[in-house]
Length: 128
Image (cartoon, rainbow, N blue to C red):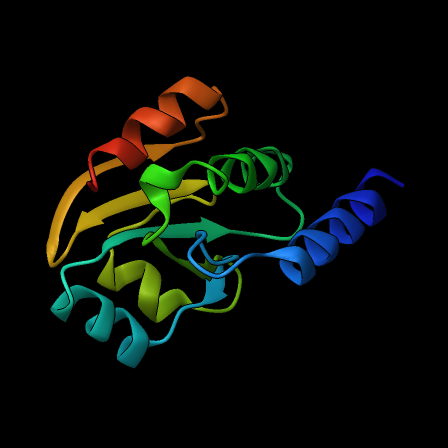
């Protein structure tokens, strides 16, 4: 039941997203990631799994932070922990619920299993 509610919430949030706000997490694309890096955009790579309760906890926190004008240019890319093993190796991500922050092409921080909103916000601030 909670999973269904979370999915409905995410769908509604995506439908109501205003231009200039953080995008809902998009599936990782090497081309889009490289373009965001070349533009010097703040980037978050989220390694997630649909069965992961920590990942489900992180998503609404990220959506709430999306309303903050500081993160209006943030590009969020999601890597599926179960099916994208090549990307896990590329980013040296060993667990689901890993958040990797980039400022352009430079990795500026990462966390694993973090669910405290203020700590996730602090990680995102490093991308600015």
